[in-house]
Image (tube, rainbow, N blue to C red; front, side, top):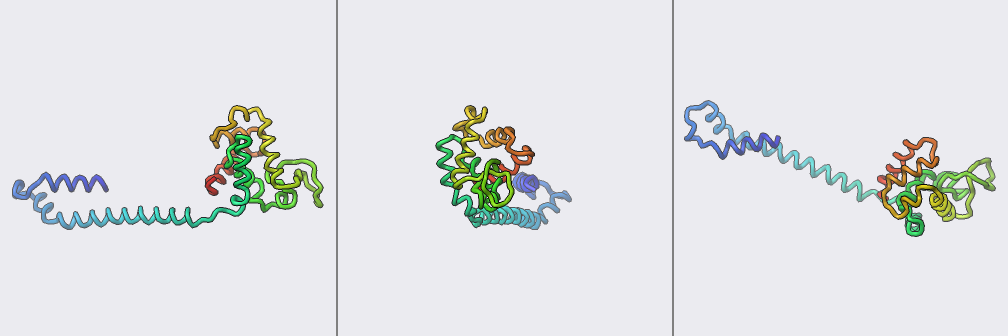
Length: 193
């Protein structure tokens, strides 16, 4: 489309009607130029309108979408642990979101376990998941476990989310590492972490 506009513009400025007398092209071109120009302008304006509409739609969607209450509740905790341990806050929070279903899972609600770690518990039902006294204890335990891994010293203090997520997935955190990595990255994007 842009090529057609450029060609018509070049033709318009390079030809003068009196320079090209008795040519079918010239008579057709100069007689129909206004119509061609109007159609091109309308098409161009339609494209601009569409682009503006799509941009407005995305802007409205991104601003209208409220931050999830779970993110609001645990963002400051993950930020403070990020400073203390050197693990990106978005990695801590996105894994907690994914593993606890935004804190709605039975394990998160009743056992304060936001990361799916197994261990001792006093749950009234049969479960293998570890019980914590507080939600904070679950977050701290996650950071402690990460701090004891081989890759921690290499990545501590870096903000490479993909490297952190790759190494955490390799430590046996998930039974399906590739799928889990994609889910964590998607969680980061969706929640703008």
